Image (tube, rainbow, N blue to C red; front, top):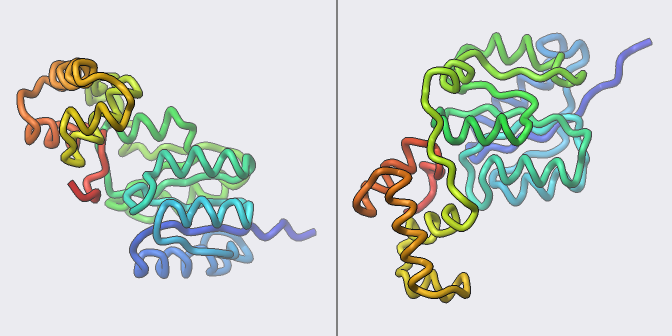
Length: 217
């Protein structure tokens, strides 16, 4: 009796990457004997979530650097709407903060775009059947690099507002808190990240993977 044919969604903001991944997934014998059917593609995070809601795929192949919604956000929402979907991230970002967030969020597979495709092709069948695989490349990053400072939800929100160029007054109005409280969050951010200016804050946040390097600052 033949095994089921799995279906997948590819989410990446580069059409040429999606095309290459689609060819690889659908090619009989490369990953699965009969190939993996690609039922939808998405070029941004919100579209990826919408396609997962619509198709409930066996596999979501996800890049983390996309417009509209970040990788961890998409992963969490995908699980909310389709608990059985296996989420595999293929990324060129290696910031320890992002890697930690993905692992802690329960990503089923994590592979680097900088690595050879062989590992990805070999491990994907097992992931589809319930296994989990984090590439050795990322495991070494987690083992060798000190974890970034832990930020509270409000500190992360404040960080994003600062990066968007908002003033303390605008942040206070947006959150419905006092300017004094915003200043407290800003000071805490600077202390935790050991910086003294907004440009240093941006640089450190990028280095630690606390923000997406593709976002508009």
